Image (cartoon, rainbow, N blue to C red):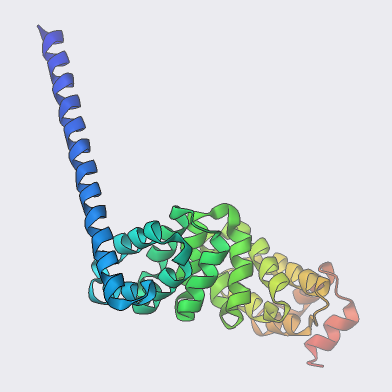
Length: 255
């Protein structure tokens, strides 16, 4: 009797689960159909998908995610216009829009990051962290394209990504300097502020990468000094990175 009751309970639960899944699938399909009609209607009224998305997201920010997803399904070749318009209308949705776009697989992660940053550079940290979370294997490429697109925010870019991926600290710094060499001092300053115990590898790596890019290393050395690293340690770390003792001495003297 007990086994019969148990079997009946399992069958009942399975049936209820299947029914719930079927209802959920039906609801999703219905929502998608409504979204498709809404986007198409707005497109007719606004003459371009960009204007349509900006209007929808501006008026219905709570529906932005599903609307952007639907628009990308309907018009994948217009992804730049859709992403740019959505983030321009609601910059706080940058991370959600980036995540959705990457999940759709409509283009490369780099293209999505570049488009999203261009839409509103002030939310660059949200963009890069969302992108790196969705595609961690492309972390260094995300750093590279983000720094190239918005070099003035290099400190925020490396800081945000290093906090999220501390085991990739040196690689993040090297990728940033390799992309835009002059940002080295700002990247080092930003990282030393939150990872002071990693001064040795940060300074050595920054000097090494800067030299590889034929960049003057004096500003990196001066930044390390201003960040509170001892002069003795700076010399040791910088020389380990390929600087000469004369270069370090001149940099520390501010020459």
